Image (cartoon, rainbow, N blue to C red; front, side, top):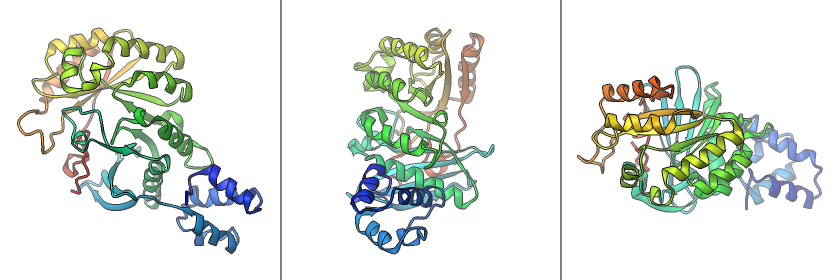
Length: 344
C-alpha cells in the first residue's frame, strides 16, 4: 500500500485505473483543505474509487499512542507509534502571539550522542519515511484547525539529525509547503542541524528560502568535542566557512542555538569568544536554558538567568543579535533535549 501523501503513486494509480486527472485534485482538496481523514467521506469522488483507495492507500502509518497538554495549554506533546513499533514525538507550541509552531521528528532516536540530550539514549533506530514526517505535520495542523487555529511554523529539530535523512526531509518540506496541500511558507520552515557540512551546501540549493538553525552550543572545538561528538568530524572553522558561503548564496541569517549549561559552556570568556566568532555575520543567537532530564543527574545543571543575560549583553555590545528562549514545555518533558518518548 502507498501513503495518500505520495502524489506520484496516487497519480499513477488514477491513470492506470483510467480516472480523469481532476480526480486527483478532488482528493487533494478533500485531504489538505477539508481535513477529511477517511476515504469513505470524500463525497466528491465516485464510490468505486473510494473503495479502491481503501484497498491501495493509507492515511496514517503512525498511530497516536499518547497526547499530553501542559497545564497552561500552550504546549501539546504527541507520542506516535510507527508500524514497526518504534516511538517518535512531536510538540505543538501555542504562543501567546497566536503563532503556532510544530517541532517534528525526522528520525526515530538519534546517532549524534550529544551528552546533554535525552534522545541520544535511544540511539538511532531508523530514519523516518517522508510520509511519516508529513503525517506529524498533518495531524498537528488538523488538531489546531479543530480549535480554529492555524499552524504557522514547522521546525525540524526534535528526533533528530534531519540532514542524515536528507532525501525524506526534502520531500516532506516540498509536500507541506505545496500551496494546494498544507501551504506553509518556506520561510516559516526551519531545519536545525548539528552542522553536517556537506548537506548544508545541498540545502542552500534546494531550499534558499527555508531557514537554517545550527546547534552550536560552544564557541570553540575543545568544549564542543566534549559535549557534541560531531565536532570531531566537522570543525568550527570548516562550519563557519560553509555558513559564510550559505549567507552569500541565500542572503538569509543563520540561527545559532546555544544551550546554557552551568560550569560547562557559560563562562563569560566564552561569551567573548562567541562574539568574535559571529561578529559581522548575518546571525541570530538563541540562548536556551538547559532543561534537565532524568539521566543527567548531577552532571549538568541550568545556567542562572543573570549569567545568560551577561552573555546576551556582551553579544549586543558588539551588534550580535540574540534572544533568550522562554522555557514553557518542561512540565510535560517536551522542552528542548528532553524528548525521549516519555509519556508524561
